Length: 125
Image 1 (cartoon, rainbow, N blue to C red):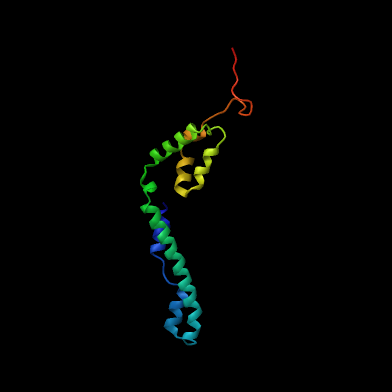
Image 2: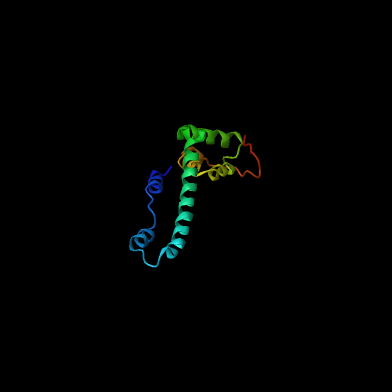
């Protein structure tokens, strides 16, 4: 999780134009209405991002250690014989954390297939 992003969400301030218009009271309150609508929309988007962040933190998958998660990825890839054809990489599209863990798991990226998988295993006496 990006702690800097969370801090920026928590420290978000209203748009400076709203505050300056309220202090100067130029043009009456009618000119403030569009700014308030924009601020409501921005705040709604911010609230949605905070909810998503909170849900990610409360997820049981988030509490797994990266080492354990990378081991699960390796077992999945190896057990399905998909390590050589990288079908296991679909796991990286689940969420940002899974992508980061998979990218930082050298075992997943160090497999070298020497036989042509289309020809099947070869036997040399």
